Image 1: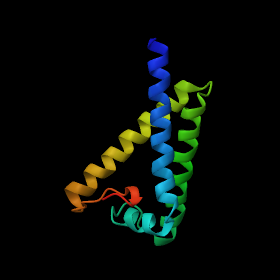
Image 2: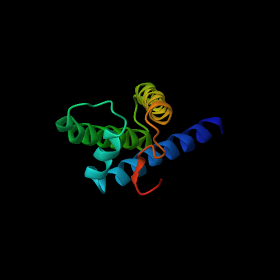
Image 3: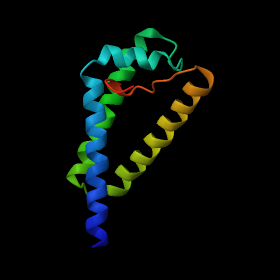
Image 4: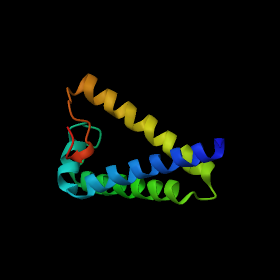
Amino acid sequence: MRAQIGRVLEIVLGVFFLVTAGMKAMNVDAFAVQMSLYGVLKDPSLLRIGAHAVIVLETSLGALLVAGNRGRIVSYGIAAGLTVIFSFLIAYGWAFKGLKDCGCFGEYVK
């Protein structure tokens, strides 16, 4: 029973990453603009690359979690790491850049 609950949670988290990546991918340019507002990437030419990298990373991680890959420890570590990094960036944006929209769902959810 415990393993089944864990598997369901793994799938839910994977679907979450896939949905957020898909929402960003529907308008990569708008997501790159949202990323620019954080002020972390100073070079404008890196923003589009960064936006694509985030989308690829979230899509890959989501697919791994949904598929229930054998390297669960790795995918859990990546998921936890992304969550920590994204949370730090969101807190930084809100505290120091006055951001009200984290960009987590592309331009579709504010």
